[in-house]
Length: 212
Image (cartoon, rainbow, N blue to C red):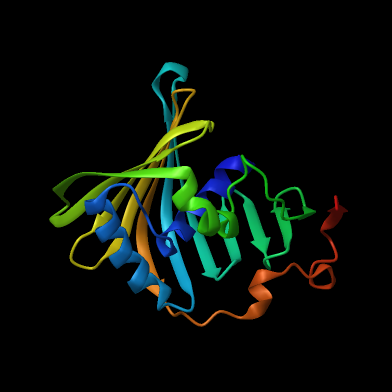
């Protein structure tokens, strides 16, 4: 679940990066980048779905995400994941426990910061097609990692008229797919800086496990 959450954050953060390799895909992603970089903050409400037919898995959950640069606050499935860009708090709400870690950069972990700096080196983009979904004209693009990852492909769907990310699906090599449908996208929303930290004094009943 933790890896899935990190990938979730990264792909939402993806909308501020540039793509290379495929000219058509690059043009579309450049437009998306230009528009999204003008936003100071972003608030997203989304639906997450995990499917693995062979294992009989079909799960659906709702989540929210606040982003300001490399700071974020993700709420999904009883967890709240908070980062101020340096420290990561994983709050297990029902267990009254929060784990504290430094944000680590490695070849497998995807975070907003390392995706922004390594995207063009690590992924190949391909324009798949223009289509119509729910009455909207969309552009569909595939992102394929150039080096070994636990997932083989990420497919993103972009609203052609609004130049806005609508959904993305991660194809895991174990046969699972992780899909995210953006239900609401609000740019330049006012966010209190306290959203990007965990203050133990405000939550005295929560056990803090410092793993740094």
